[in-house]
Length: 508
Image (tube, rainbow, N blue to C red; front, side):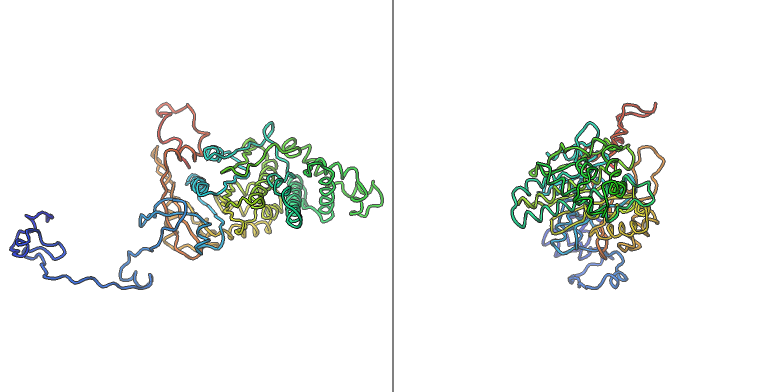
């Protein structure tokens, strides 16, 4: 075997090499019989062409420029380049048209892990992390470790008034003239949208749960009267219910009722729906004054509703929608008071709320609509497009698909062929990308201790560009903070299993 030693290099006559007392360069060939020695070596000639042309001559070509700026996510699986992800920076560079992030993959591949990595990095860049309605409570350790604030909402815990203007209170008090009028209209519109959504939820068992035009006007009039009568300007739902039950002239006019008795008959469904909000399964959580407050100088905040995780979907949906509205007010407040901060808002379990009743997709879109001009990055995640197909009616399904398609960046984990076909309607996938995603979704071996083949592997897509296949590595601290399997961390084990096995507790 040839080596780089002087002895090997001078195996044959080489006067020039001996005079220089060093071996001949390997690129010139060896000075042995058949060694291919050349006196001179010309420089190579570079050629440039499109991938479709060049790959026929050299089939191992890979794309370049796979290291966009952003939060370090991992290394490119083909080139080992570091890959960053920051939809706001990509928007600034013209790589995307909006800052929405859609994350999809099988359970266990690490959807929440990449979202939490992104949240950790973006808050370090100065973003405000806002987690609205954390159903599983899995973001609470991360928010607290970032120095943020967590409110745990539930029975006997923190309360959240759906009509609370929350962090916008300071902005409304400081604004004057037209600016104040615009803020108040924004607050009112959000309050009405949330009230309509909550009423739709409590009517979900009815054949026609949608709120009528007359009921919408009655709600608006009752809200205005209750806001004016309340010293703080922030009424609670029982205040609206009391006004409708008292049936003042200003309210009766909207139904053209001949007398109070007829009005009560015409407004019966609306009054009963508000009554359920005050006396039904969610009593005590959303019908009283709020006990949460948002310090706008915090690096992150979270509304943890995990105490309601095992409740009926009706309760969870009401909690999620109320949390979304409150969080949206927090985001608006950072802009209104002059504390210009970009915002990162992860929205896990989004579809659990939207499938409860028809029409909730529209209300959710109003409450959570992405506005790139407000400097907001939103991350939505799901296991399957079946979550969208399970919505109550075709109109909701179409709107949900639109919400998914509007995201500028897709982060895909392991998927089967059915899911890939659905994804292809939003972003085209090449045959190579399809093979990669299905290989990550392959079932792991039955050998104990082996991890999922797609864990920590992601394909980042945007538009027609080739995707960036990325492999992420976690630090020891991240493994602890991002762990979603804490419920399985017990002191019990099978007779032949060590409960302290390092395989346990790996972040999903």
